[in-house]
Length: 202
Image 1: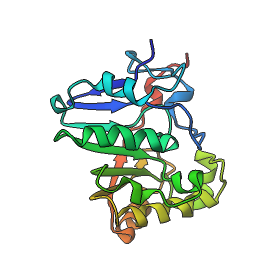
Image 2: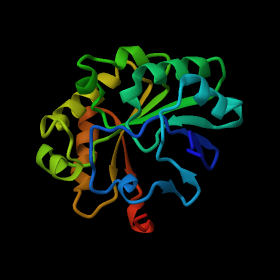
Image 3: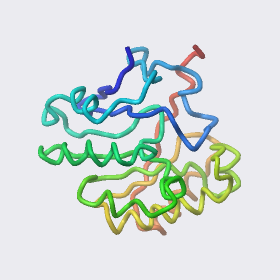
Image 4: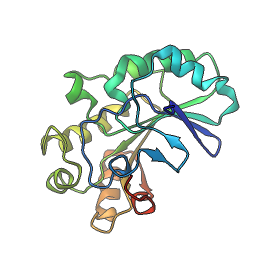
């Protein structure tokens, strides 16, 4: 059975799609369909809002609930909004992890639609320039994805309380330059652990 949710420490993560606009070299979804040898995150079908909420159960038992799985959650924007709206009836913190390409995907600025629904957004930009990003992340939008991600981060500050940009802890990424970019954008910055080396290809 597919895992719609998975727990890490006291946070609950929501795996709502496997679709993504990137094909990142370092993404573990291309190496293992089971996360932490416990959660089968490769979906046979995308869960409905009702199925997601049933899988969550009581949200207040968690420190936070995070939209983050084996795909880009904002591809399913309407579902994200419906689930987040239902969760707003509780006091749980809601975070969303994204590649920052939702405005390209939907052809409009979707960030005002998340205001009041998402407490924190984490945006992966993973490189210090567009050409390196394209060589590593292989967006369907090519090199223009990078500037769109920067614009997405700037716009996110207007609508979401906390905005963090992240990079994967890989040697070929200039993390100091990435931190400076985050500082210039006026957002937080975090280095994410690199998981892939822990997984054998299934």
